[in-house]
Image 1: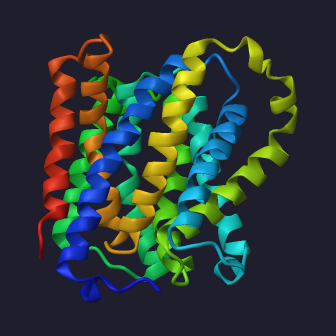
Image 2: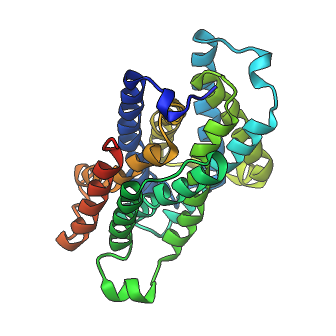
Length: 301
């Protein structure tokens, strides 16, 4: 059973923070790499195969580690709820990346802590302190500045691109996922719980995306699609799912999602490494605000 924040040992809390630091770096890569193939394959088909490959890895790790037992999968509706929520997030992410650039899309992702704090209160009655609320406001302001490309006129007109709008809906699902993990976990190890969620997500995607799966010419896909798929399945799925589950059982929902504020910074580094250049200086001001928000959220009361 998940521990209350006050009952989590300090060492376990620090491990939760380290897990989320790694999570933010790996997730950022999915924005930069995902944008390279977003128009080459249907998002549902891509994510169905992604969950299949990642599920095999997680299932093997769970079987070799804590073991897989039938009693660990009692109340399967829990996994179906979590799997549906996370599948929705990933499908809408790649749908958004068809038209949105990686950095502003990552900035949309940084709005999840605000929403996660709201879901944390709704599901767990977790309350944000005044400093946490201020940090969420600062981070949200920085995210909006990046999303609207440091254009005050576009912000005032709320001139939001279609890709960013589509991905925002997915981020609402992602924000609900974190506190739901804590609420629905009944003592299952992180690997086992993740495996159950991934099987449910794969079932949902397979049933919903059957036409797309059949219509996809898998043999004709460019090599880059398979390379990115490998990264998504291993690094941005199997590894990050376990890291998120691990941290969500040790940290409050708002602090878990606080690490999403690092995503635009990591994406900028990924974009530079891929030779795509850096955003203009005014946009970097918004990124700086998100990093400031992270620092405020992680500071102890």
